[in-house]
Length: 337
Picture 1 (cartoon, rainbow, N blue to C red):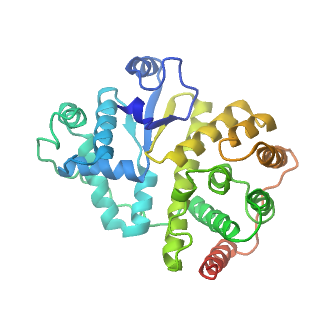
Picture 2: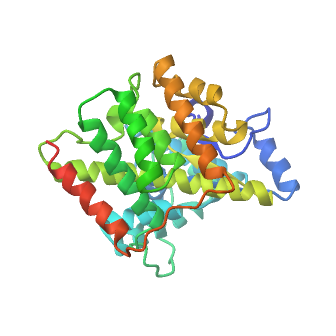
């Protein structure tokens, strides 16, 4: 089930047997390597719903979430849903986030057989009654610095898309803006490649309500996209750090097609290096050959710039620099239609 749905994306070079073969996790544990799943918002929410007794009737994703949970329980794979509950707290407040996190932990503590019976269709809900696990009081509403950065970039991506001009020129303008106004952020850049791409069937799902007359709904869609970028950047950061230590390996769990495509391209570039032809080949999923080559060429220039010994990360003496960029981006979004 999990393999057919391609629910998991590895943050490491997977073994030849793949990531759905139980033996690879037994071997990893014998080597002192712990596996951790980072679920996105939808996956985390559905796992919590399992403990609440929600039925899987007409909900394929809930059944897949049960399969994922049972798989993880039997193989001693941990979950780290932190970003998912920061996202929920950002939308609905700390109380809602703490409540759902408690149900998530309750599901994770459930007997595997009860969960697997749901996954395999033997029952359409868990057979036992569960309670939420008490969780420490945390202020999950506190803004994540990287979310603010990702939100600014997401606003810029949609601003460029709503403007006139060729898509490839918009992509190149984004690269230039990143280098002069903010930071060169790989996860945000790859999401832009998917969204702005001329051959991209996934673009309609990236920024919801982007052309709606209700501009607050459009901004809500941008915030949602910023959380997608934040999930991805957290996954990449953890995966890169664990590659140095060698004692943890991460898997991203998501139903989101464009998020998985973006992750795979980013991981490929990270493993293979900043070769323009390799990047262009990856971009060919969403761009024509010539456009992909132009974008790849500029990406390599930026990668060389930020990886050079002379590179100095952008800073500002203005303590309100980030908040001003957010206000500017939101104002332009309100005026766009």
